[in-house]
Length: 341
Ligand SMILES: Cc1cc2nc3c(=O)[nH]c(=O)nc-3n(C[C@H](O)[C@H](O)[C@H](O)COP(=O)(O)O)c2cc1C
Image 1: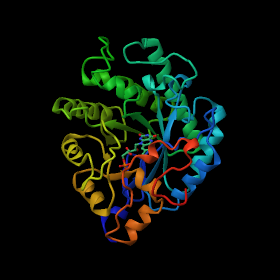
Image 2: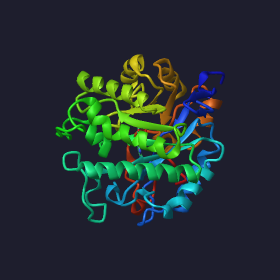
Image 3: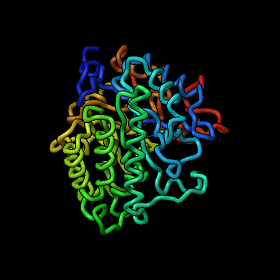
């Protein structure tokens, strides 16, 4: 196919060989201590054979009290460097970005009884310590061979909780205006650049919608994107409140939002959600994003990007059933449609 989809694009100091991104996808298979099992490395190795522009890893935890579920990968000390190295190496020539995050309230019940961080209760000192933990994790990622890191500011994990006014009632510089609610993420980006160098790519994923899809929240996101551009964030992947709805739609879920955000965004946008065929990717590029990101279609069929390249009308067999979101090891399978798993 001679479309833009399989042409390169530059994002900061990164060159994406194609416009299809593997969105961050937790595989819920880590060992109890947070180490990455060989089965997960094999999944990255399989992805490396696809015409992808970027591989975003699973959401990886930077600090023990932030472990968002008991199957989440950890990266909070140097003992996890070999895991990181194995993932980065498995991705081969495709730039691989480690997604870093903290579960905040979602860590309740899975962080071994450690204190649960919330926007309202965190002290300034705890915020500073966490920002430093992000810096150390990013340096580790750089040493392990990752092309960059992504801050998880979406899906109601800690930074997303900070950004939604309904979870953040602070009256100091981390609460109130959109800029203040985004500050903790901005400080992480600055810290990462301070320890890894200005050129080390920091991306972020952010929810572009709130529960009710209000224009007010969308304006807040536009403000956050302005701040993100100023503090050197290389690109933003925009998701939404209901990040992986279990419905089949005839167009990507957040297409209209990204079109509006792209009008003012000072940094490249990557769009995720409901992208199932080449026409969806083209629509995303037409809307002003530089790349389209997919998660469930790759769990369903890892050869999805190759199929898109080879068959213009190919459509992912993914039914968006959401089965893959609960593939805890005891359940055995990762996708209702993927026969070989
Ligand atoms: C099994 C599963 C795990 C996911 N893990 C992550 C994650 O670690 N980090 C993240 O930002 N999003 C995660 N997501 C959300 C996806 O990246 C994506 O935003 C969402 O599934 C919508 O895209 P899709 O319609 O292509 O699946 C996950 C989604 C699924 C289905």
